[in-house]
Image (tube, rainbow, N blue to C red; front, side, top):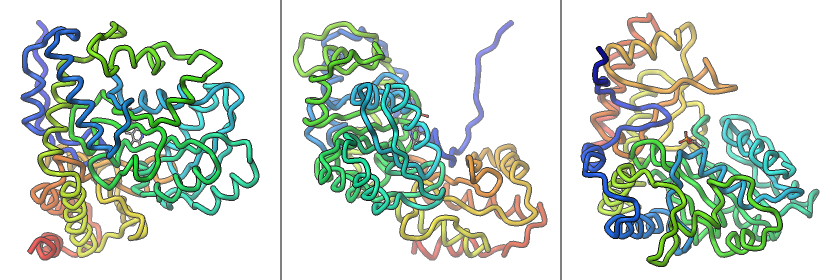
Amino acid sequence: MSQSFHPSQRTLMGPGPSDVSPRVLEALGRPTIGHLDPEFIGLMDEIKGLLQYAFKTENELTLPVSAPGSAGMEACFVNLVSPGDKVIVCQNGVFGGRMKENVERAGGTAVMVEDEWGKPIDVNKVADAFAQHPDVSILAFVHAETSTGVESDAKALCQLARDNDALTIVDTVTSLGGIEIDVDGWGIDAVYSGTQKCLSCVPGISPVSFGPRAVERISSREHKVQSWFLDMQLVMGYWGGNTKRAYHHTAPVNAMYALHEALVMLKDEGLENAWQRHQLHHKALVAGLEAMGLSMVVAVESRLPQLNLIAIPEGVDDAVVRSELLSRYNLEIGAGLGALAGKAWRIGLMGHACNQTNVLLCLSALESVLAAQGAAINQGVAVPAAMAVYS
Ligand SMILES: *Cc1c(COP(=O)(O)O)cnc(C)c1O
């Protein structure tokens, strides 16, 4: 006989999904209603308003795509890139590589600007690329590279794009709710995010927002968008501003309750307060890790508070440490990706998971697992070092 599935209660401190708040889980279990029910349409409007708050934008075309962050990425590229378009794609980690793939599949040409993994995007190199390719019409980059824990200067990159008459596509999957994003202030034209990182909602939804210049580009397309599902002209008829909604697909109704609850929580806390909370717990975590004798991979000025890259000490077995943390402490941390595989761990402090209890759990669990592995670490000092930051 088949049985119900009952997952363990984990603490999620990896690159996502992050811990989902009980309030959000409770919202998921509320009665399902029709997706064209007037009550649901009211909820859709509220979600749009809350997303405008979170992104700091007045963009009319701000909505949650009914699919994960990767679909938000694809939605931006398929709608804005037409066959023959030239796009500068910055790559300093895994996700820039996916942007390149998206440009090429939409029939465009990607001009790659590459930086070392673990370093931010070099704005000067992007300026050089614009100078060499005056026909570029879009600049695409990742604000918060989850694969490396690095923040790039989104504001400066958007200004550079404006100066060169290019639109911007910005990945804020890991930034939204964790660090400052100012879509209107920075002049971002198209932005996508995800629900499972610092919004601490269930995975599977991707908030997106398109500014006036992007909407104009979409409306004047000569080629049909190759994706039917992600064609914003069609999606707009479903999520559009008026009360008459045309059936396009069935929104994941209960997941939208969860997103709404997560956004209400973010607004109650206040964006700035959420950013400060991420900074505080990041500082405490780093103080503890460094006291233990571990070292951070990313330079102080470009570290993401919500995603911390720690160098794996000599002689320590990466996979054993992570599996011991999971089996003994129910604690998930992330492995390194790509160029950093086997060299670094990724400790997430995202959204609801970004709190003092988790910081102290992570430090003490890591200390005991590393000590059992015979790693040369300083014992008994990590938790006091973190506590010193809190007091
Ligand atoms: C997680 C992530 C994505 C993809 O989101 P999914 O929800 O996994 O599809 C894209 N970009 C960045 C920077 C991410 O961290």
